[in-house]
Length: 122
Length: 165
Image 1 (cartoon, rainbow over the protein chains, first blue to last red):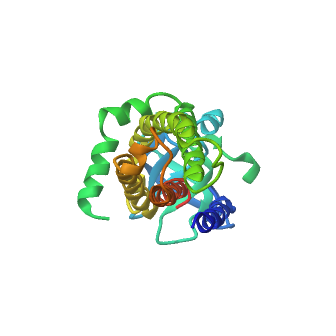
Image 2 (cartoon, rainbow over the protein chains, first blue to last red):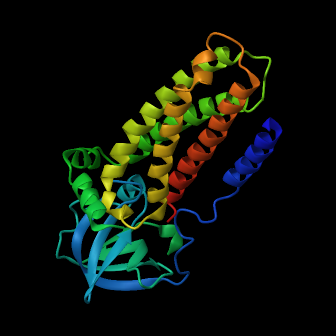
């Protein structure tokens, strides 16, 4: 009985430790870079695992996922800098699932100001 | 996901705790996440040692010698995990609407805690402080240990996967 448990347990641990089938970040995104022009619905938030903002493009509200908060801030983008209603141009890799309007964001431009969130991906 | 759960998530996100955690600066989520991981390390590390003993490993070590420190450390780990997990959940709770892993994780934790309660009130567990256990009592505790590992591993695995959904 105990032997059986031990064997089963070892198998369970191996499965649990196997490499995760997906990874945070870019695995679920398109390779191609998409450019969006829209108006800010919800300004930059530097809380949580990643900074976020929302923009409206046509009738669709897009969830923009930025870098982790500290990195986003290092790109010069702070909370409150881009006001709600501002027009922005955004480049990034959109979700493979086109039903989701979600994009991992590489670059944001508002007026003459550019924010290079992931310069190495441009 | 039911709309009442979605309402609860919105309430949690807009709670004063959520606003407070979001105001703590760019490193706060990472630090709270660190506490959560330390809590899980303590919780699962201790539980693993105790459960393996109950499943037949290290039989030369008296059970009561192991059970006292491991259950205490697991309690500390659980408290750390809860105290960091709730703030993490409040930061952007509505992001988790529709996340299936969340719906696996919390029932798994509930089952794990129910199992803890059932084991600790069993005759076998109460007896192990005072005497050697009978084979039937060892089997009873081995079943509890197997369930414990199943439930906690399910909770940890689904918890980790929340961020990858």
